[in-house]
Amino acid sequence: MVDKAKFATGGVRATSRIEEHPVEETVTLRDEHVSAEQRPADRELTAEEAEAAFEEKTVEVIGTTEEANGRRPHLSFRPQQPRRTQPVVATP
Image 1 (cartoon, rainbow, N blue to C red):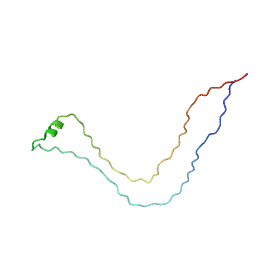
Image 2: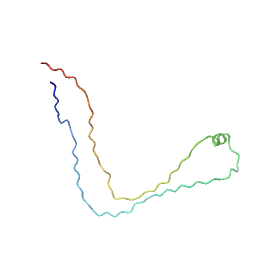
Image 3: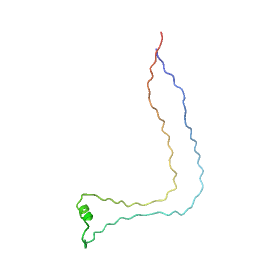
Image 4: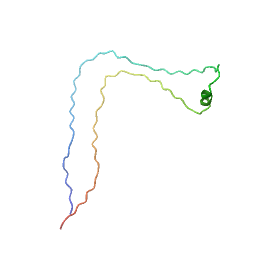
């Protein structure tokens, strides 16, 4: 008969404590706005521009905004449990 035993091989303990302090702070936030305009082609293209003008492509521009918040990042722990096999030879 083969039996298994479980042993502690390490660990992590995280303690958090909360201290609240009133905070008033001015922060600089940024807003990005996207606009596109089509201009008339009023000049001759160079050979490189002419070749690139007829290639299929997609251009994507995304506008973003920032918001102020007083939250702290969340800390999480995930135990890793890899499995392994070990041959066992038992004598009667």
